[in-house]
Length: 358
Image 1 (cartoon, rainbow, N blue to C red):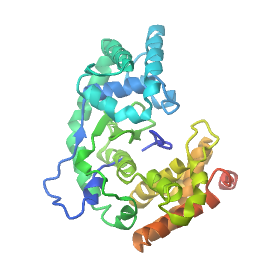
Image 2 (image 1 turned 90 degrees about the vertical axis):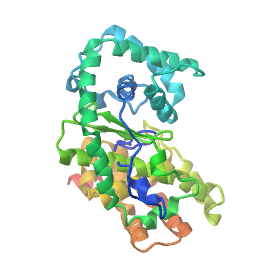
Image 3 (image 1 turned 60 degrees about the vertical axis):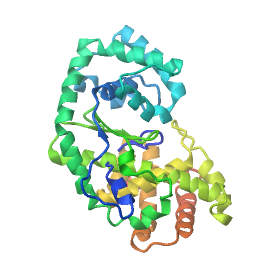
Image 4 (image 1 turned 45 degrees about the vertical axis):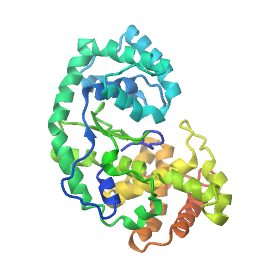
């Protein structure tokens, strides 16, 4: 989630993580499944400005930053139609839609909603004031794609110590890193770089004009989303508590299936998923200070994000211990879920933001 990447979101990813997950395979001649497509990037832009989902808010798309004029009344009508067709497809269709865009929007055997989506994309792409500024950004993005691949190699050294936590979530069906589509798109705002792992692929926004150091930081979005995509922690939590995988722990099932009373309406299993991924990617691998992030969330007034970062601080010792001195899968999941339910679940969590501001 960008922000919390429930179905999306979630704020922020690098995908060489999959390389380490493949046991004892040859790791030479590294070649990623990085995809850089103007059609995909333009579709992503339309998808965001349509605001079809609460996660596609106007704050994360800055038309002035993109060099695009304000939307006309006709533009807004087209986007309303787009949003109406897009909403039934939901977030899970994201990768399929990106692949469809990459192929040139073929309509054979597609549901009726796709025709509305295609019409909207064609409408905006035909407008010079939209197409040309975004085409320039696309050209710049293509120039830095090799640098992104280099970042994939560098991150490999950082994840070599993660086997203690990784082994908890890997299954026989875990996908190989080079089977996952990784879509690179340009940023839509100077203030936000988003990413997502919805469907069977990953996307992340990168600003080609930034310094190599900043781009390296933005590649952390790939790492974040790669963890979601390869580990599927939420699925493991639900199987452990709700489907007999955890033996005695089915009493925790209702807590993880509860829906938080906020505007996003996420299941608590999704919140725990986000906490785990933020802890590994943003704190353990990227060395972010969770207390600083928590205080920033408090100042912004985002209670959900504040709860997430407070949860990171609470669960960090348990997650670090699993990396350094691994417990059995069942014992680790039991400890992690019990701590979450007793201290971070929305039914018991009391915001410490006032104390942080003091």
